[in-house]
Length: 360
Ligand code: PMP
Image (cartoon, rainbow, N blue to C red; front, side, top):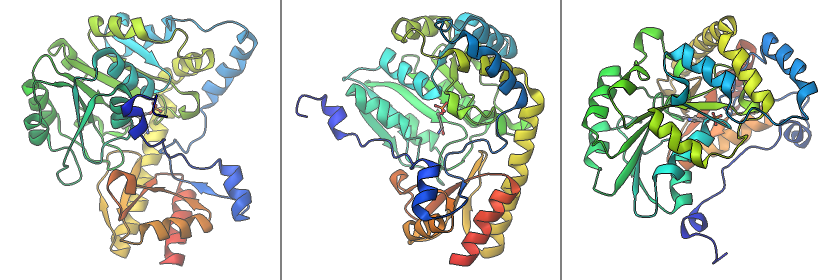
């Protein structure tokens, strides 16, 4: 292991849960409710399912290496040129591509405390220096992040909304921040939960690309579009940045089924609207539970709610498991007293609420 890159030796593997059926068997339960990975509870859209079935016969072929149709659709939808779009095997892939394209061992990469785990992961894998800036009210402290910029800073990750806290930055705060970041520092604005933001509060982030050459916006099909298992995400940036990323991208990094599903999902307005509605209702349900029982929670713009359950959060997590409800401990995000609960269908949220009432 001494042969590994120093940054790699320091890393801890991504903590993923056990497969659901395995856990179910282990716990001796007939049914478990998984509210742990911010997935879409609606199930796959009927239109996507049909398209996937039609695609199966062509799977002996390599996928379209450039994702021509999906990129064109994304470009049309967001009024950009197709050569500004970079596709990834999930937006995680795009985040990694960005780091590998622009960052080296000499650089520093800034992100917020309690920010998404992939930012330190891709930074350390390269051997660059991660700079985690203390959060303010669980969210990004943008002034402190600006103050953390040094001549070595090459990239800043900002998630809006943030995972696992669900915190949100206003359009004005975000715009003023980007304006103050020096041109030679890339701002990666991760909008994985963008579609859940009420439309009147969304930043025109993709429009800002016309003003800021050092801005990259990332989005995903994993959340509101309901395709987490297929792994499809993308970034929109200047054409020059997309060109550089494309040079190191693995050819065929997005598989044929994912390309097809994402194309169909992008047009499926009905599914998206339903996903957003179910999420808003489920959020009310969980917030109502917190308020009724006096739990503090971090107000969330995502498809999850992070609840302060107390110093025995690890124990509550285990007890919930034995009740057949899987949530996500966030101690690894320096939130040892919180649990993150993804918004499910009403009956799944109810299962969590009832399990909490039984074990409390
Ligand atoms: N960014 C944030 C903030 C996330 O929470 C997630 C999913 N957990 C991702 C990016 C990556 O999602 P995916 O790779 O599935 O697109």
